[in-house]
Length: 322
Ligand code: NAP
Image 1 (cartoon, rainbow, N blue to C red):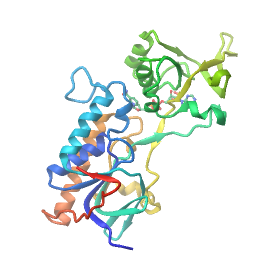
Image 2: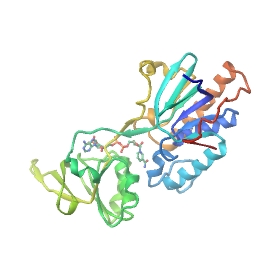
Image 3: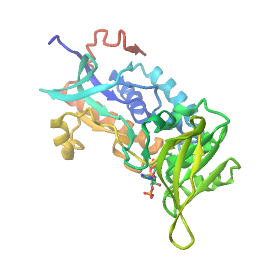
């Protein structure tokens, strides 16, 4: 195997946690390599409004905040590699980050890889209907004048309803008799003319109906406690039914060590990948900064100040030096 390029710090993910980590590492004089398979900003790109990120009184739209963070990442001088991380493994004193066909070795890695949509078995979705069913709302950004059904009763479902209803009619389908989202989000969505919220509504099947539209088989609870069938047609369906950590690239060994990883200063986790339901950009950014400070302290102790990265064009075709 050819010698791998070496970096002091690798960051997996360029959402708020990863960007904050890169910015803080730059302040310590540590040059980092950041891996991101999509656009920078993470789920901020899909957020209707962020109201609790300090510095933005009155709030800021998710895409606008993502753009500000992207600018800060550029200014940090971190090297951005636009590629999906396939594996993260330990080899002697290094952590090896591999993308398709390439690898770099890092003295420390901050995993800030966020979440991916959780797999669900219901509703039962016909294969030919899948082209109109989405798990990530940014894929519907260009859609206007349609009817979008959103399944879910959490912050994500209501946040999506707010952004989608700017150009479409939206029906939010909540299976229970209460929502999990912030009350203020539900109140706002309900006050929008183009948003309908149907509680106690379970979608059991999704098929392609006439004209290529979706036909959602829906069971709503009737007054007598029984179920009433009330099908629904929609142009698109968004499943906002929860997310899970996007950490499938961790090696068996690192996964086995997971309970002790929090104590290791060469492998740290920050942001949504470890935050469960506490997925907020402001929390993620703080954790990214915190992780970067720990990495910088570890490098100072173990490697000595002033040790830089010996990178040799790792970015060429896949990355951009920033
Ligand atoms: P969540 O709070 O876990 O909500 C998931 C929703 O999906 C629940 O209403 C759940 O119903 C429903 N559900 C799950 N499986 C289902 C199925 N098979 N059929 C129908 N419904 C199903 O997840 P989330 O909305 O992704 O939010 C998680 C966290 O992300 C939040 O706590 C928040 O911190 C963060 N977040 C924040 C914002 C924001 O601030 N604007 C936006 C997005 C996310 P049950 O309640 O019946 O289980």
